[in-house]
Image 1 (tube, rainbow, N blue to C red):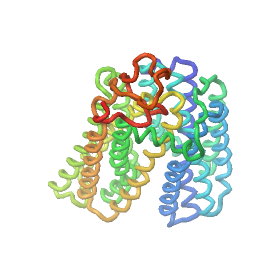
Image 2 (image 1 turned 90 degrees about the vertical axis):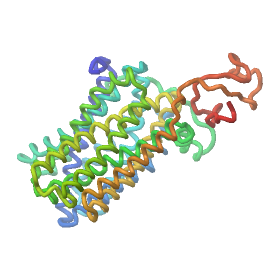
Image 3 (image 1 turned 45 degrees about the horizontal axis):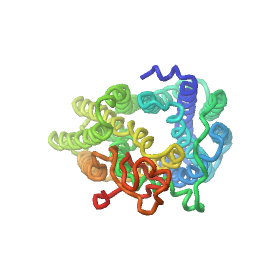
Image 4 (image 1 turned 180 degrees about the horizontal axis):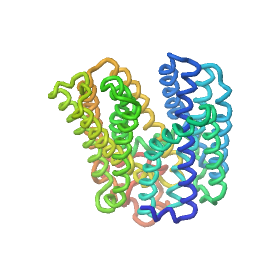
Length: 452
């Protein structure tokens, strides 16, 4: 898997991703401290609102940027977004009001919503071989997991010597270094051509391709399964560990590290697994694991009388760590191969728009599950919460099985009655022919059984 880092361009882009992620992790810690400094006992409410604003920025900005970024110079666009993020990070230490936090978060996350899908859509062109791209996807998942572990530890170490405001300087430095690394490479020229039609056509093209492709509709259902399992962990770990188990901050870090460790283990093994097993099988197995683990966790809590909490017992703590680790495995197995589906479901010129659609739609799932995990976690017993989220994950997995037929990657016989006989697309197969379907201007709809 790591041999792909020898590719000069990808190696530097991966380094840029890691450094920017560490900067973002420092920002997360610093924002929490800033919110407490400004809002005191309302810090939780401020952070919850900021998180919702982040998701709203992702959902609304990414499709619009995806419609136009393909016509812009990739390197200049990515560098510009890094510089915008660095400038916003520089302004954060001077914030004195809560409403200023909200504006800064929206602007910062809007720049991230522009940067991330464009960056993701560039990697398939940098690494055209399927096995190399699969390794890149696993490395990317690994980078996100490492960031969740390394950034808080780095922030804690820095805070022993500096004021938290200086963490924003670390964030700014991360984005500047990321921009410098992107500047140091030559990126493939985007093959995209200007989309026909008005602003509506251009901003919705990615979503229309996405929702018209059966395997991507299945991916959307799997996004919901991942968001259910992930939100339960991310939102409720601190409440479960400190509030219900009565343990300390180190225990919170250990629980989150178990989730990240399970995800990392899955990411490390996936490249070899995907050489032998189909994406659909792996991703559905990951979602099924999420369902089974949540249901089992709920049952164990109920059977052992830990309906409210594992009562601070050593066995309850061990069950929590094991559960979080297995959820991490399922989380990564379901999520990591998604880039392979997006790559094969769009022509090169449409990839930025389709990656932007995935970015927006997947974060729309998190926009639903984050508040649900918080609101229900505050009012339901832990066994009931896990059981409810397990049922929702099971429903999403069943929907994915139904929406994603097993043969969508195969050549499908179809015809084009609206095209003239001498059209270039018909030159090899006549009016009726077969090839793997990709939604585009010639194939705006997926062939139905009646049309085959």
